[in-house]
Amino acid sequence: MKIVFATHNLHKKSEAAAILGPQWELLALPDIGCLEDIPETADTLQGNALQKAHYVFDHFHANCFADDTGLEIEALDGAPGVFSARYAGEGCSYSDNVQKVLREMKGITNRKACFKTVVALILDGQEYLFEGRVDGQILTTPRGSEGFGYDPVFLPDGFDKSFAEMDASLKNSISHRGRAMQKLISFLQNR
Picture 1: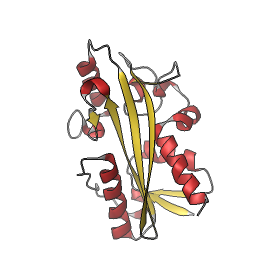
Picture 2: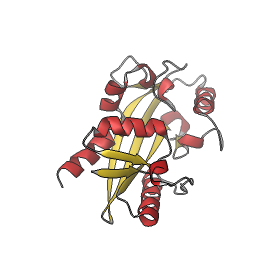
Picture 3: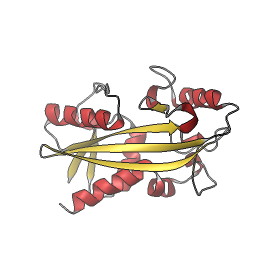
Picture 4: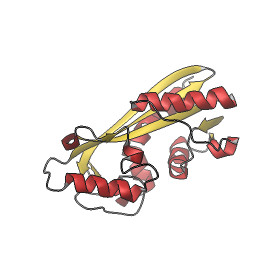
C-alpha cells in the first residue's frame, strides 16, 4: 500500500519507514512533488498534524499521514512544546534548539520531560488521530550521535542511554513516534 508521510524531514521518513516495514511504500512530500513548506499555525500538536495531513489530501488527493512532535519540559511550563522544531528561532538548527534548552535548564534540578507525537491520518477523506508519549529526563550535556532533534539530551525513563545513544531499532520500539506509529499500523492492518 502506498501512503504519503507529510514531511520533508528525511530523518523522520527513515524512522517511519523502519517502523512501518516493507509492506508499505512510504512516500514523502518531495516524492509527490510537494516542495512547499506546509503551514503549521495551530497551537496544539494535534492541530498541526491535522493541518499538514489535510493540506496533502486536499492538494494531492493522496491518502496520507502527518505528525507533530513536541518536547515538554516540566520546569519550563511545558516548553518548548508545539514550538520544539523552531524553539531557538526560525531557521535554527537541531543544535541551536538543544543549546537553548540546556541554557534554560542550567541549575534546575527538576529535569522531568516527555516527548509527545500526534499522528493524523487522512484515509479516503476520513481523519484519525494516534498519540504516543514517552517520559524521561533532560540530561545536562548532550550524549550520542544517533537520531536527531533533542535526542542527545533526552534520557527515557528506565534506560541509561539517551535516544541519541540508542540504535534505531531500540529507539523506535520505545519512542513517542514509535508508539504513535504502532497505533497507526495496528489501525491500518485491521481495516
